[in-house]
Image 1 (cartoon, rainbow, N blue to C red):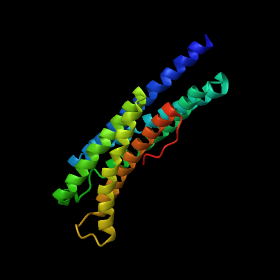
Image 2: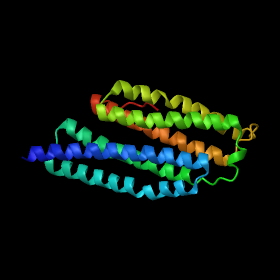
Image 3: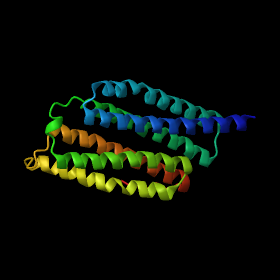
Length: 213
C-alpha cells in the first residue's frame, strides 16, 4: 500500500512538472507577443500568471522532500526526485524571465527597431520556444537523444546574442537599442534553462553529469 501511494505521488509530481513546462512556455510566448504587438493587457496577464509557477515549484519541493525523508526511495527514484526539484527551479526562472520580457510591451522605440534586428529576435524567439517544448518532451519520454538535439539549438541563439552584445560594446554600429539587447539576453537565458533541463534528462536516464551548454 505504501509503495502504491509512493508511486502515485511520483506520477503526480511528474504531471506537475509537465504542467509547469506548459505554463512557462505559454508565459514566454505571450510575453513576446506582448512586445511584438505592444499589448499592455497581455503583458499584465503574463505578470498575473507568475504566481502559479512559484506555487507549483514549492509543491514539487515539499513532495520531493517528503518522499526522500519518509519513503527511503531507491537510487533511481532519488535521481527522479532530485531532477524534479532542479527542473522545477529552472521552469520557475523561465517564468520570471517571461515577466521581465513582458515589461517591454510598451517599449516606445519598438517601431524603430531595424528589420534585421527584428528578424534576429524572431529567430531566437522561435528556437527558444522550440527548445522549451523539446526539453519538456525529452523529460516526459526520457529521450536522451532528443535532449542532445535540443541542447545543440542553443548554439545559434548564443551566436545571435553575442553578435548583438559585441555590437553594443564596439560602439553600436548597427544602432542596436540597449533595451532590445536586454530583451535578447532574457531570451538567451531561457534557452539556457531549456538546456539545463536537457542535462537533467541525461542525468536521470544515464546517471551522468554532462554540460550541454
